[in-house]
Length: 185
Image (cartoon, rainbow, N blue to C red):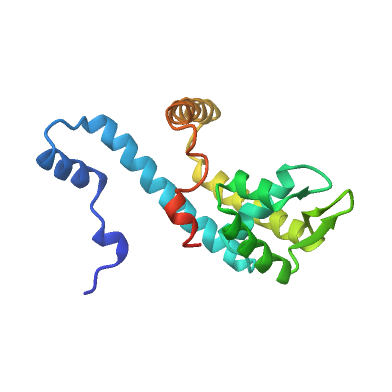
């Protein structure tokens, strides 16, 4: 019988026990929370990736669509602004925009008021892909949280926001990706 990736991974308790064996100063409560968050993040990224792939887009492309939608109508940003929002190098952003323009998800045109500046704009098809991805994600997320009461959801949301604020305060430059990973995209 061959092992599946799920069966090859240690349970959280096994992982904590191994950490404690190798690192005596470990707080098992802290490590249990951090390991669970890490695993949850990894599995959610896989789930979202599967959803976006059914739409013919990647998670990376969805991020650009999201940034344009979040900018508000008329859903336009310059490539530099997009790169900053997504924590990418300009070269990585250019590559992503090229690919997406070829797929009809965005257009790229010169700014009429500043001919040097380029404007990236969400197309109708790009907005439809974003909306469908949001619909799919909403179903997935509701299912994920179905066992939590409204009060538990509110408590969890508040606790996670507190952790996020702490990380953002300690690592203010960590909003995007690591510089050494940008070139791999």
